[in-house]
Structures are given as structure tokens and as C-alpha cells.
Length: 285
Image 1: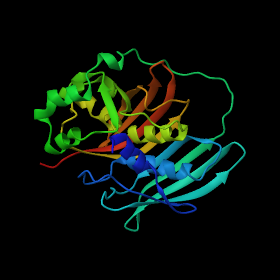
Image 2 (image 1 turned 135 degrees about the vertical axis):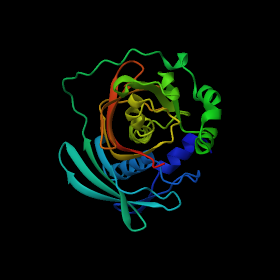
Image 3 (image 1 turned 45 degrees about the vertical axis):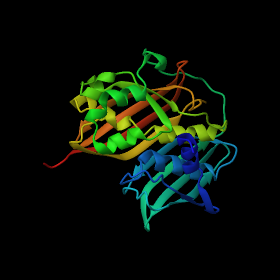
Image 4 (image 1 turned 90 degrees about the vertical axis):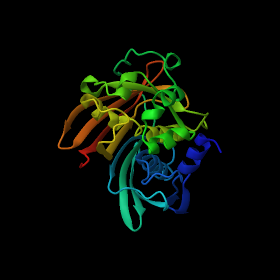
């Protein structure tokens, strides 16, 4: 099974009851569940209870680390169904305790005035190093767990614009850019593309709070964990086409880093915005 097919299988939750779903985790050796997986699965659970409208925003809090060896139960509360908007609350449960909570809002398609920030001027993905190039250059410097991670086929391809951040080069205000897309085509369902992008949005965002301090991608001196995650979907897109993910970090304090992301199509259309606060605590010793 390809990595993208495996991802779609992970996002295809089992329905246990009208508002109750069960999700599984990939058995890839990680000690905790990837945060983007829980975001994506919780959004899928919410979407399974809404018809004729798509999610436009989500807000989630990570409560406890997820156990990849146990299934995750997603309990959906149907808060409201109005003429234009629907609201859902989702609680992810493992071992009898909540590990993640999500609120999601859905909106019917409407016409209205439009504006957006312009896309940053960066090289296209074809002119940048591939993940295979990055792996070859830095393989000797990677921790063993990261070597195993890069050795596996992955569903999301990432091409960095600012290559120096891998070597500890400081980026003012945490600004850096990556191109992302799935490594194989996705179904045409727009909800699938939103759930896949929600999954991918957690992959690089917290790095923006590290690069102002010259901490590289491979730095193991800091304990990092996502604390919350918010996302807004603005316009249609395909997650299997290249998307530019522009990051920044306005603030870092009290062992917490605040980060933001803007996601554009290669034609310059702003399709989604992301915000996150994460724990960045120096490890003892």
C-alpha cells in the first residue's frame, strides 16, 4: 500500500454509532501519535455528521499524548445546524480520557467581496532540493529515530525554500517557506483535500519558533509539543498539487512559541491560514 493510500485509510474512520467513530494509528514505531493525524481524524469525524456544507475553520487543543498502539474514539456533539452555519465539537478519547478536543464550523457557499495577502516571491518547487536530496545531505547528522522516519515512504512531500535552516541558520521572525503536496493523487472530494491539508499543516509549523534561535531541524536539546491548533479554509484547492506554506513566529516566551502559516496555490491564491502555540522546553542536562 502506498503512503498516500495508507493516509487515506487512516482518515477513513470506522463508524460505531451515529456520532461515534473509531480511528487507528500507523504502526511506525513512534512513541506518540502525530498531532496532524488527530487533527485530520477529528475533522473527518465532524464532517461525517454534516451535509451540504464544508468546514471553514477549526480550533483544537492537545490535552494528552496519543498512544499509537490503541484506537482513538471520536465523539461528535452536534452543537448547531443553522441556515448558513453548522457547528460541531469533537472529543478524541483513549484509555477513558480525552487526548484532544476540536471545534469546527461549516458554512454554505456564498458570494461576497474578496481580498487576500499576496503570495511571497519564492522559487518554484522544481528549482528546489527534493526530500531525497535533503536526506542524502544530512543523513549522517540525523538522530536514529529521524533516520528511520525519513527512510519510510511518506504521504506528504516537502521542498524547503530556505535550506539554511537545516544547518541552524537564524531566520528573522521565524520566517521560512516550504512547498508541500501529497506524493500521489487524491480523490476529487473537496472535503478529503481539506482533511489531508489539516493533517499536513502540523508537520512544519512549530519549527518557525525554533529558527529565530538558530535551532536546526535536527536539534534534540528542546522538548517540543503542539499545545493547540487553529485553521481557516478560505478557497478551493487540491492537496495533491504544490502548495506554498509560508511560516512566521511573532512571539516566543515562557517556554511557548506562537507560530502562523499561510498556504497558497502556485498561482498565488491564498487557500488557508493556520496558527499554533507549542511547548518549547529545554531538556534537562
